[in-house]
Length: 460
Image (cartoon, rainbow, N blue to C red; front, side):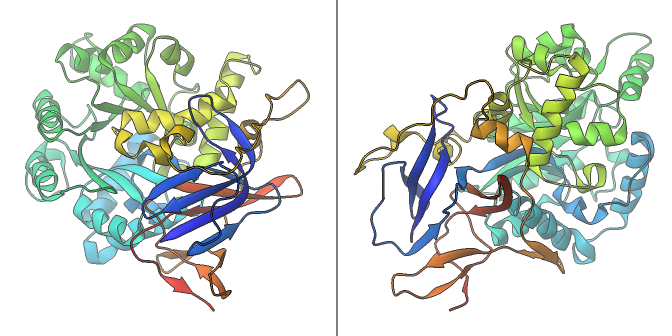
């Protein structure tokens, strides 16, 4: 199937970070075949017109969530993290696949799709159930089966063996990548950490963990080691940290620990909204120092239990403002472009998604057979003007789409070759494209679209 997106402002995220006005995008099969080469061919299976200054950009990557907790929105408010964890562990112990894991995962996936996210990293048990939801929805996912000490889990059997079975059973493909996770240093021994790292090495994937999220986590561990190491120091010493490690939070990291993360090649998932909702430390993580020392920083939402939203645009805006406010440096400490990079190209590189890199960074040179004139790049914004990257963070788009009964629906208008009109409904994507439509200067509609071998078309 071929899709043409017409007359968009294209935020390419290519090497030069160009923004192209009035360009088309051609999707053929599961590949973006042409970007910004003037008008692409007229003979296509589907045409999406986004007149009126709409933005088309690579889909966003949410690097930390627990999608099967989507049903917990608003149920875990105004409590500290230790109470939050105690309550969620109790609720998890009562859950079954039939009792809502699959439906809750579908609900969370459709929320992400309706707000521009086309790839997510999950940390949970029963990832085999969540895998089925991913396959049905068409989203792309890295699914990390969580491990912890056997006497502290609600899982049946040994969590490490469960993770190994999951890694062996998932054959991957373009949209599902199996991974291993560790809940956290407060419930996982060194043995669990090192076995998880071994699994990640053996299966060539990432190992995903919570790390240094709260002061209590850090100080409790220091007391446990008789006034010795902090969690990041300890995991660095035992050899757990590596370029395969995706560490969520890292709020309570010293400058010495930041350098450890950077030297080991760790990727940090920054979950600003969740951290503020749970009140984990009063200040954001030391993101400027992480960047200065060469650590890779990405952005996550965390779960609907700790965020009440899976909206990556809201997460990007909050992350940007949190650092500027805490450091008293709004002009240049952390730019809109850096934030957008964290949610797209940096995340793709960190997760080893270079084989599908065209979904997250659109390079003109990657596409053959380009015809027509290339649209003129928008000039760099001057004082008093606003770039498209700044507009994305200044006014996050309101979600379009509604959730009902564990399912979400979102529509784009399409033009079939025979002239019939209808709507394209989920499940949508393999290629990752986010379209933001604008009215009266505000982005009011977010659609994530893409292509699979077959489509569910409704309307006539």
